[in-house]
Length: 555
Image (cartoon, rainbow, N blue to C red):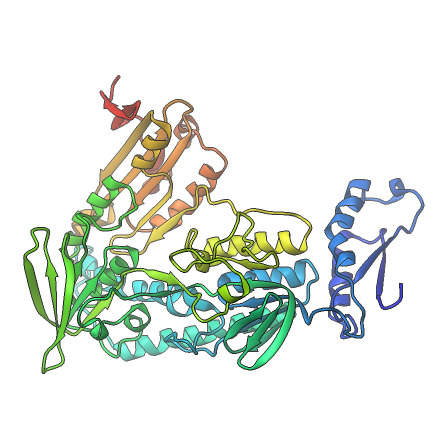
């Protein structure tokens, strides 16, 4: 067995001891690539090993079988520098890399551009979009804005105090310190999991060679995890608009803000800055915001957004942005009748008009990686690209663009590529939330999707004023909806609008994942008083659909 190192662990040790020994072995400098695992039973008879059955032994052997496959000489004369090289240190790329290293013994490297709050062709940072310029800073700003509503609500509960002032600079400074901390946390995660970090922009030179700012590395497998980036629509004056990176880092709260777009990013920032006191206007082409969500929920959200103070401009297509001598901006849009409407005095115009996969100038097509028309990397169900050893996960593939989905894809990739266990991401019943004001959370199918797929559907709804709003004077209302397959009684979708809906929906997502039936939901005793209990008290359907057509609710 020349050129290989051997790790021999007696099977009278626990499974955890074996794993610990193997991982310690991988950390040794002499272990250049991987290891060869040799199972040496301490006793001839497996039956004499307490707590360690033949099945356990087979399981361990299966788990570390890949180590033998990737064994190489300890003097570094293997074919490649790394077993895996990941381009992009966002949530998905980091998860895939550390799992490949720690769980499967691969030698792994990752590259990412230097950290900055505003992304560019040369700036990024470990943690990626979600952590540094997406989900995390946005949620911190949501929390900050919600205090404004709480101060008003407190009056109905007897608190006689004036609304305190806002020191925006302190808030921004604290937010940015937290992002600095999280960037450091991700760097430590990589180091603690033996993933080598290379700072710089990665580009493919061939199917096994990566260039990082002039330094070249080779790898058996390459993973593309570069995410996406905000886009602007090509209208006159688009250069005057800002994108989501910038709206997270304004030097002061705008007095008047225009937002172009009707998706969740647009409505989340609309709620944030409306809470902080900006006069906020939202322009979108559709009759309702949040395209792709349940239609009944969209109607309810539109009403509630206006109740909360947003100025909505549905069926208005922006055509021009102009900058005045005083620095303010005006926005011209065409309404549904093609009449032009211009509003002015905006401090900023935010374009929240979608994102595109980050695949430009990476050498992907040059080495044979197929891209979709959108620019997304085309992959199969196991995240393989058209080049067998090159893989892609996360938003760069434009499948289901959510951070937890990228984590799932990263773990499935690691198991497939390094664990001798082909695994596929499961996109059914993935819960998500819109952290607007009010917030929305859902899991499973909308009513429209359910009717189209199953034909016979029962729909249960409940609209109500949350208890907190009964004496506060807050006019906000909540809404909940359950969509059920009438033939099997299986719950197909659940939707909720109201405070803490994301926290509540996460639990119900687990129930849908294991096939929750409506009759099972009916047996659950509610927690009283709570909004969540509404989900287990809806007994009579609001409407029934049979053969895709509505029928009498009592039929």
